[in-house]
Amino acid sequence: MNKDTFEKLQLNELKEIIKTYCATSLGKDLLDKLTPSGNIDIVQRRLRENKEARSIIQSSNHIPLDGLSNVNLIIDKVEKGMVLYPDELIRMEDFLRGCRKIKTFMIDKGFYSPILSSYASNITECENIESEIRYCIKGNKVDSQASKELKKIRRDTLLAESKIQEKLNKFLTSSTNKKYIQEFIISKRDDRYVIPIKSTYKNEINGIILDTSSKGNTVFIEPNSVSKLSLELINLKAQESVEEYKILSYLTELIFEKIVNIKLNIEIIAEYDMVFAKAKYSQNINGITPKINDIGYTKIVNGKHPLLKGEVVPLDIEIGKSYRSLIITGPNAGGKTVALKTVGLLTLMAQCGFDICASEDTQISVFENVFVDIGDNQSIENALSTFSSHIKNIAQIMNLSNKSTLILCDEIGSGTEPNEGSSLAIAILEEFYKIGCVTIASTHYGEIKKFSSLHPEFENAGMMFDKNTLEPLYKLTIGASEDSNALFISKKMGIKDKVLKRAKGYINDKNYNLDIVKKNKKYPFKEIEIKEELSEISIYDIGDRVKLLDKDDFGIIYKPVDKFNNVQVLHNGKFIEVNVKRIKLNLKAEELYPKDYDMDSLFTSYKERKLEKDIKRGSKKALKMILKK
Image (tube, rainbow, N blue to C red; front, side):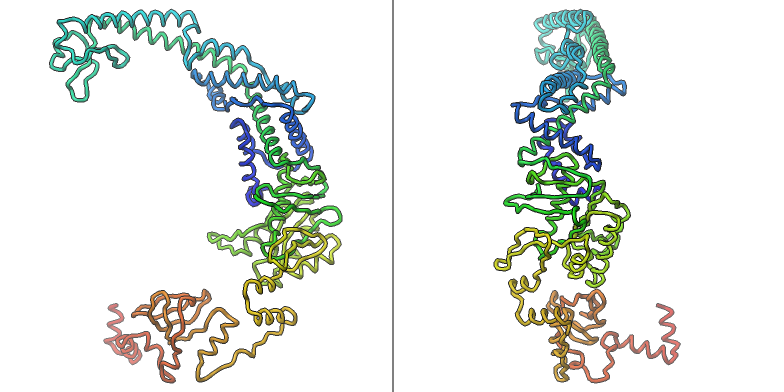
């Protein structure tokens, strides 16, 4: 399977919805990585987990996953030998406590969920780490009680700070110093206590200038009376940092010793979060756990596309028992593409372990590969047309397919000449059948319908359409093909009856009525008007006068219609390229100019014509002019 399949069938959009039910980013990350499995044992386990999770949710008021956070980045730091910060240690303690809670909760649910509860026995409890972090870290910092040494250092720090405060208060209240002081407050600069002094008196105070105000009016001085105590305080702060680092290192080491177990805990918590998110989603959509097989048999009963909103018409479809290829026909906008996407997405959902919205008797086959060719993959960069892009995609699918492959093709063989397209489509479908694939394809081609009705391993199906109301019924009927109803829809949309009658005749006998094109010598442009019934492109000749619709002005045709439906027109002395849809015939050239008139003279000046004649007769002057240019 490839990303293109997931994108076209909107699996990633569905996963985004299920992620909203996750309690942690761990579950969301795991859902991002989840891909459909082609192994039936893995799929069965995933679906059983989902069933058990639903039973737990129904029997419990609360799943203790709230508050658990993703600690993978913290684990990465530990593995790199980095020491954790206090806030990281608190997050780790919360995670380990959450692991302990979910383990107790899940082991208690062994009766409801033998598989899911068995995972809990692999969760390692780290109560000693929890208690050590809780004892050492309080309020996002290392607590003073974490060690005797830290307690003593902080007590000495407080004592030193109080002495400094006392001496500085005396300095502030001294009448001698009153005239020097800018503000009667104790401030701090670079973690040292200072007094704001007027700059004019900075030399009158015995002390160290640690800072100056932006305007230069104030200097911040540490008086000599507290310098010794300040140095002592700096030393104590350094000792405190060293001691805190020792404690943080010790706690980080405890985590490192259990890192393998903690990483396993992370995986199990992520798995639980994802499984319960899947179960909550299943509850919300009233989903069922489908029966599965690996023999290619799929039977969807009342299946609904999970991303469709409003009143969704359920789909009934069966394939893989008496036939392995199903050809879906029916009118445009009748639901063929939605049917293909519904089968594809429900298959991928089951293989991911998601419940689906369908009836209980639904069966889904597990495939090693699911490939789709849906939508327009036209590429301007790679110069691929719609047809080329489809064929390129189908060629890649054909090379990667095996007998355990589901292939979904929308409008197979379209985008080219119908006879070639239908023949190629039949050959491609035959090849998929020979490989052993299960194939569902939609088409408008009658030849493919005919082939399907004759082949014993193919079956036709049709999307129903209400011919009275012009509304699609979105109902699939297996065993009978449906017409495209193009003529009926065209009539409803206002196409003239005579046009529809002519079209019906062409369908039946291919006898095209070309007698309607009659030449008229007096009014030759009448011929063009008649021909427009057969072609959207008018015929323009050199010298015709045309109206430029965008410029509301007239020009002369210089070059006729090219393969891109553009003409070159002489307008105001300049040649411009215009699409035929942006011009309108005013007068034909034969009405404007005499017979045998030299049309080239319309587009070349007198000087250019004279120069050309001079060159032909061998004029040396003309040759010099050419060389000069």
